[in-house]
Length: 448
Image 1: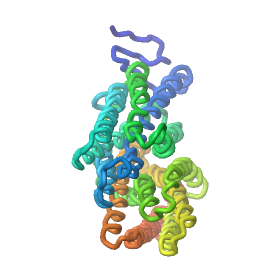
Image 2 (image 1 turned 90 degrees about the vertical axis):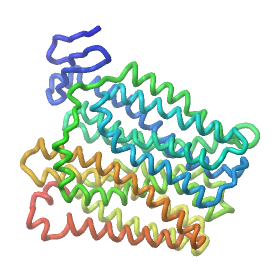
Image 3 (image 1 turned 60 degrees about the vertical axis):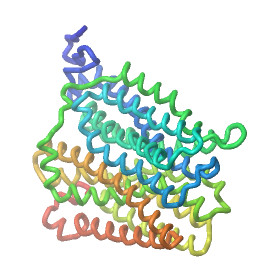
Image 4 (image 1 turned 90 degrees about the horizontal axis):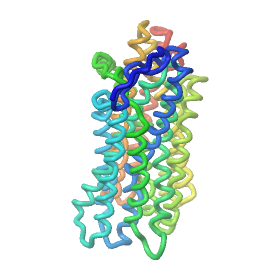
C-alpha cells in the first residue's frame, strides 16, 4: 500500500520504503525531517558495514590457529588464505558501487548483510569437520571477501542521503565505523576461541551470526531507498579519462592498501617472525584500531595545512616505519617490530583521510562547474576505493614470496620501501611542485 506525505518539507514515500521526494539541500526539509531520516540510515549502514569488515578479516585470526586444531598448512598456503579474501573483497567493490542505484539502499544493505552468513557457515563446517581439504578453506576465505565489498555500496548509499556540506562527516563516520570492524575482530576472536578448554575456531564464526541477523533485520525494517539515487555514467566516464583519477588511485593503494594489507598480515607476521612472542597476536588489534581512529585526523590536518602536504609527510613516515621494521627483524627486536608496525598503521590511517580529502579539492580546481566536479569526485572515491583495496593483495603477495623464497621479510620490506618512495615522488610531482601551482594556482588555494 502506497502512502504520500503532502507536506513539501517531508519525504514522499511509497511501498517498499522507497522515498520519491528527497531534498537534502533544502534547509527547511533537512531540519524538519531529512536529518532524522539520514541519521537513521547512517546508523544502520555503519552497523552492516562494520560487520562486513569484521567478517572480511576473520581469516587473519583463524589462520594463526589452524595448526593448533590439526590443519597443517605451509606458509605459502596460509598467505593464500589471506590473499583470497583481499582479492575477492577488492573486486566486489566495483559492482557493489552500482548495486545501490540498481536495487535501492534498503534492499541492497539487507542482501549484503545477509550474505555474510555464508562465510560464517562455511567456516564452522571447515573447522569442525576432520580432514577438510585445503580447497574448501580457500572457498571459505573467498566467501569472506563478500564483506569487503560492503564499503563501496555503503558509502555510495549514504552519500545520496546527505547535503554536500554534511557529506564529509557522514562519510567519515561511515568509513571509520567500517574500519573499526577489523580491530573488533582481532580483539574479540582470540578471546572467544579460547573460551572453555582448548581452541574452538567455530566460535570465531558463530559469534557474528546473531549480529548479522540483527543487521539484516534492521536494514529491512528501518532503512530506506531513494528513487533519485541513480548512477551517473557521464561522471564516471569523465573521471576515468582524467589522469588524476589514476594518480589518486595509486596513492590510495599506498594508504588504504597498507592499512588493509597489514591488518590481514600482522597477526601471522608476529607468529612467523617472533615465535617466542606469539601470545602477542592477541594485541594485533591495536594496529587496526589506531589506524581507524587516525583516519579522521588525516582529514582534519588536511583541512588546515593541505591534503598533499599531509599525504607527502605520511609516505615519508611510512618509509621510516618500514625501515624500522627491517631493522627490528635483523636485530630480532620484537619491541621495535611491534612499535614500528603501530606507526605504520597510524600513518596509513592518516593517509586514508588525507587522500580522500585531496580528491574533491583536485576536481574542484579543474573546472568552474561545481556540480560536475562534485559528481566526478564522488565517482573517483568509488574507483580509488576499489583499486586501493587491491593494495592489500599486493602487500600479502610480497610477504608470501619473501617468506617462501628467502625465509625473511627483508625482500618484501625493501619492495614496500621503494613503493613508498614512488608515492612520495608522485605526490610531489603532481601536487606540490611550484610549476603546478603556477599553472593551476587554484590547486594551492583548494588545499590540495
